[in-house]
Amino acid sequence: MLYHLTVSYNIQQVRGLFNLRAGARSPGIPRTSHPFFGTVKETSQSFCSWPKKKLFSLAYHAPPVTSHPAKSATRVTPEDWTKYMRFVRRACRAPTPVQGDVWLRLILHMLPVNSRFAYKQLTDPEAITCVYGCGNVETEHHAFHTCNEVFPTWQFHARAWRWFGVHFDWATISNIDSFNVSPTCAANKPALFKLWTLLTASVLHTIWTQHNAIKYDDKTPWPQRVWEETTFIGWMAAVRRWLRFQDPTDALRINVLAQLAKPKRQRPYNTLWLKYPKCLILEFSAPTP
Image (cartoon, rainbow, N blue to C red):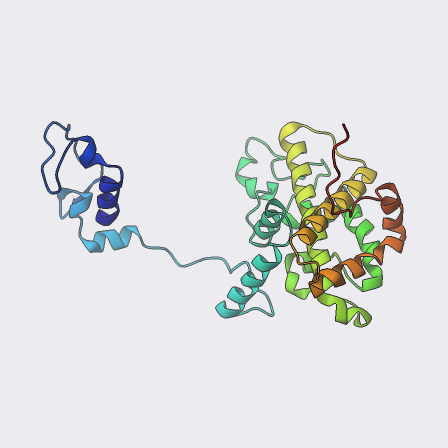
């Protein structure tokens, strides 16, 4: 702490401001008492005089009482948790930062869903219920997956991905290392995982922003068709952004484009692709005069 105070003293040019040489007193500068005092052996002492034992006790961190958010049946050691979190962070870099941040916070159980506000029930009995008014307790699982307002959106995208053997179940979304594809698509798993990551992050971010709009801004819930089109357009925007960052000759980029052409023929996406034929155009169009 003394080091940082000394650096601040020099960096902020306090000495130059008051025309003081190094090591000199500071006459004319009003002195104040130390703001941090504590009792040590029945004597009031300033912070800079406290013994190390007292400082250690203040900085003590109690052992955790809950399990690590990365802990699972297949990840039991701290090394496994570290490896998994490294994988999660790497996966969350593909979407936009705000989309990846929502997914990362969801995996770490950091998002303030209503079930965390149980202490408000004395004054608001419905404080922990879903914002859509279904009456269920709003856990992360409910808010992002099982609620009747959002689950049809996952089903909509899942129908287009059935050919790949890809699922949008909660176990895979909350444990992304369990992502899998059908045996016939095993060679294309990295490309499919990239597309699945971009889509899932876009849907999760849309769910969370819509949740907050209803809770805090009194917005009206979307019709199902709006959910489908908004998440599809958001996914395409995330894909375009990712493609622009890649080398055109990169093998993964080429495979992603090849795999992306297959869902176009699937019924859930075919109509939207016809409605938005330019959703994957990477070139910026010149503004019309």
